[in-house]
Length: 329
Image 1: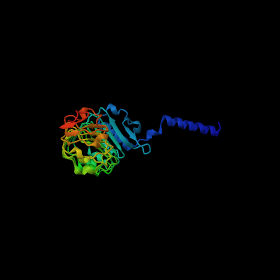
Image 2 (image 1 turned 45 degrees about the horizontal axis):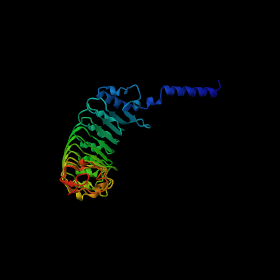
Image 3 (image 1 turned 135 degrees about the vertical axis):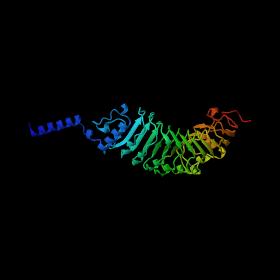
Image 4 (image 1 turned 180 degrees about the horizontal axis):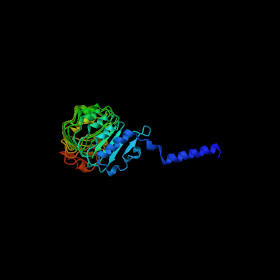
């Protein structure tokens, strides 16, 4: 056999061996694997993590992702998982983790572990529908790379910490459907993300809105179903780019006729408050609207979309009239 043919056969043999025993078997970083196995043990070795076999490459396991170059674990995601216990503190020992997504892990309970502050590269933190209890910890402000925070649908209590405003690029904050109390901190006006989403609905927040909100251009602002009061018109603005505002089911009281609206505002829900005055013509470009159960008066402006809504959008006000309600007398 010629040397060239022998070399070709050797190369083919090496290729076959590499397919049988792929290089990825050695890709998993041993320190990450050790941490992952501790996480599995803390969760009582659940079936959901059956693929977390110490004899295999951890980068091939379900519920996680590794960086394609460094092979370090960068993402953990437990979605609709049947897991019991508390959030394992060992998660904080994955030094290159960027994404942590715990969604609808209904048998979890307890607080957010402080060990998460060790995750210096964490960008995305979603822990929702997880039965979290206790206050929102101020130490989350130590996660300086965080851009997205979702702690909705839990049982968190107490107030909203000021520390969120110290996170340089945080732009999405969702604390919806908890048991939060107290005032909305003025520091939230200092969020610096490129697109600002603030969702605080279904809590027991009280007091007036921070005056500093007048200078914030939220993309989406949802304050519905709280105990907020005072003048909420400061969140509107002709030069803002907000597309969604929901301040419904609070105790806000202001003159709607003096509010200024931007043309990009698409969703506007203000029902169940104490808002008075008349509906300004500038609201005619809104696509989805509800101003029912307020103290509004006067004729609904003709033009735009204001006549296209069902009468339930306007009913239970003091003296609104005009289509789609009864004609003005």
